[in-house]
Length: 235
Image 1 (cartoon, rainbow, N blue to C red):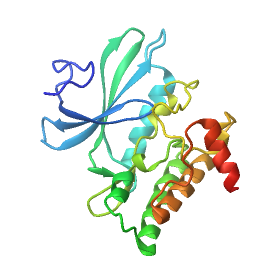
Image 2: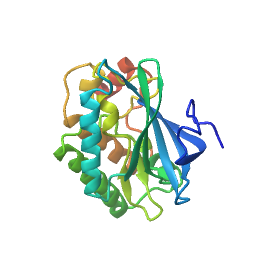
Image 3: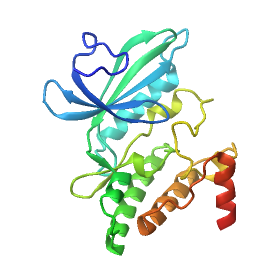
Image 4: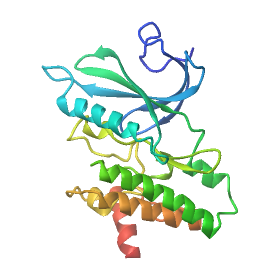
């Protein structure tokens, strides 16, 4: 069994770890196997800061919201299968979000199609991205980090949004950093540290749609300042 960070096999035996498949702003994602069904799953390991009363109410509310969203079984949202908690480390609790496993993300899908996509294909992909984001927004969730790596593409070419929801409430002071999150799809108001809402996701979708046509990212900044300069030069 592969080691999933500090996860202990005897404390968390429902899933057998296979290998790390990604790292985001709020946690590390592993491919794992459900011991009961034998199905592959995506296991996201995150750290929840604890208060004197235990798990923060904001986190509990987000867990309830994620479960509610899951009940809709939306075709363009990655399916949440389970939420479990593991061991305590200091004043933090390790939590595991278990999602359906999809083999490729949109970035990989683009790489595997070097000749590009037809207008009809791009319309289909864009429509499914917009459909998923509209569903999130209608349920008071702003994704904040839409990018090809967070858009999963199934074997039959359908899009599912991933990496949303619970993570955004772990720490309201938490900022997106260039260490683990690409700047290229980030809206100007986020780069400038200004208040933001659902339009930041629309900006990201626009950048992704351009990339589907050109097969290259629209703005490839190396720092927040450089990213803003590239945006201003094209505006």
